[in-house]
Length: 101
Image (cartoon, rainbow, N blue to C red; front, side, top):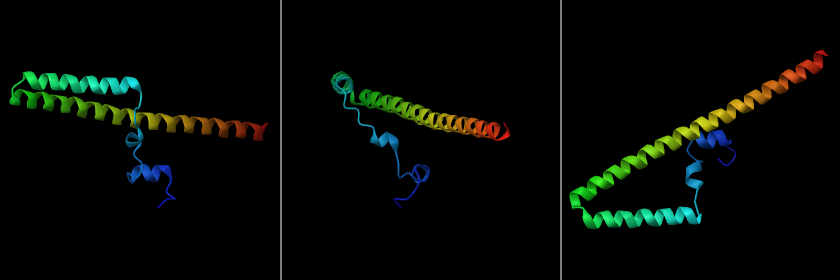
């Protein structure tokens, strides 16, 4: 179904923008490495149960962040569509004024 519109692809989950994002910046890589090192530091100091609790809390942070990103994406798409409607309505009004004038 290569002829689907972008909107159809989004609806059918054939297009997933967040899967296309691959941060290659040095800052991202350094941050990821630092997080891994800190997690190792905590694993060495906590009991297995405490470390599992830390990982569960970390997963809750990740889940919350994912929800925020999803909502931000949805709002951005909606705002983009509203901008487009506003531009098209303005264009239609301009054409209508030219036809009357």
